[in-house]
Length: 159
Image: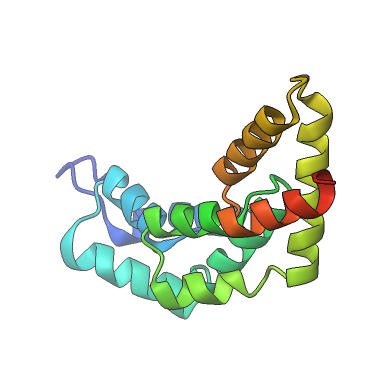
């Protein structure tokens, strides 16, 4: 902040916001909120975002691809949960669709089976019908599509 006027200038905030973007991939809404927190408003805010995009500090498609890939590989989230999280971050539908291409179908099915098997081992209910219901509810809550979940459960756990 300028000590005389109490105002924030673009030049003061630019290095801070560049470091913020360089540390990890960010979406536009996160950067916009950070700039607002710094006290940047109006045309200065829009110009800084434009400069970040031009200098490749900010790339929404790259963010969406990285986010989707990470949430799938590390947290083993399903497509629905990833899509919803990206939409909450106000990522454009085009970028959300591009991000979904990061998840290979074979990897997705394999990960679903791993998540199902791990949870199956944890469930102690003697009634197989109830156990399968709890299993499906859990995996669907992780963002996997219900029809795919049930198809896989039938394949793995029904005689």
